[in-house]
Amino acid sequence: EKSEESSSLLKGKRVLITAGPTHEEIDPVRFFTNHSSGKMGYAFAKEAASLGAEVTLVSGPTNLDPPKGVTVIQVHSAHEMYERVLERYKEQDIIIKSAAVADYKPKHTFDQKMKKKDGDLVIEMERTQDILKALGEKKQHQFLVGFAAETQDPHIYGKQKLEKKNLDAIVVNNISSEGAGFGGDTNIVSYLNRHGEQKDYPLLSKEEVAYEILHRIMDDLKDVQN
Ligand code: CTP
Ligand code: CA
Image 1 (cartoon, rainbow, N blue to C red):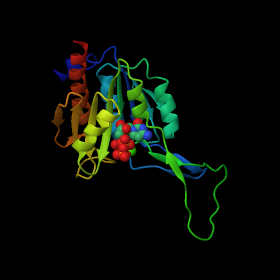
Image 2 (cartoon, rainbow, N blue to C red):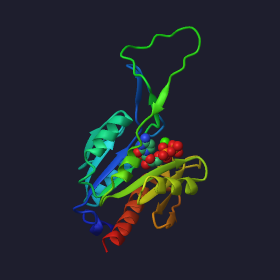
Image 3 (spheres, protein in one colour):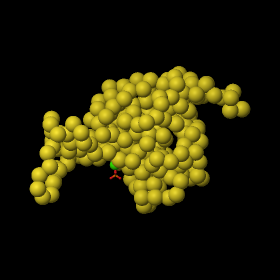
Image 4 (tube, protein in one colour):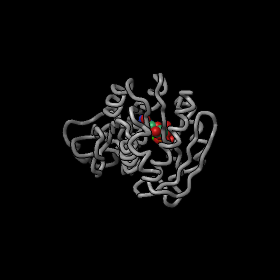
């Protein structure tokens, strides 16, 4: 059954996925980042393409090979990701924001390598733009899916983010439970939609998570269209 539905369920849909960490530069040799591997987002891109979607993957720096049949746009910083995503937003049907975007960046980026001095160093940081929140504010027909990485109370924080960012659905994961979150090949997630429906998944490979969540999204999309 799977092979028959493959390559047609998302036919004619444009899906934009963000993946990976961002790098926020301090100077030419140093940056702030996080532990995101990009595997979850790349799995979504591959799965969406195999379901027939026209997929754009906006990716922060990762070690992963670009999935076949996907348009890949490489970015470094949160700001770059913001620009690349926003300029493609209008024509998209589904957005899946699995990137681990840095919340802060250094207030100043130095052109030359910083030299060490005696004593401690303080680096002043400022907030990056919240890409997902901006998408929620500008939302028209798009089905907007966010992610929430939490170390405690994932459902509570996930629901708050869904409401605050005007999302259609959010995929929450408790990154402190074994087999979930950054780096690994598996994940334990829950899907919450804006109607308050919740589905908890068991430990799955990231490919399986992508497959399951994309099918949930398609079910919710049908409700929107009917
Ligand atoms: N996100 C974003 N732009 C940012 C920060 C986060 O688009 N500058 C997106 C992420 O891609 C993810 C969602 O917002 O889909 C939630 O990210 P998360 O880090 O869990 O939540 P935050 O809103 O940043 O809140 P906090 O880190 O304080 O929990
Ligand atoms: Ca964050």
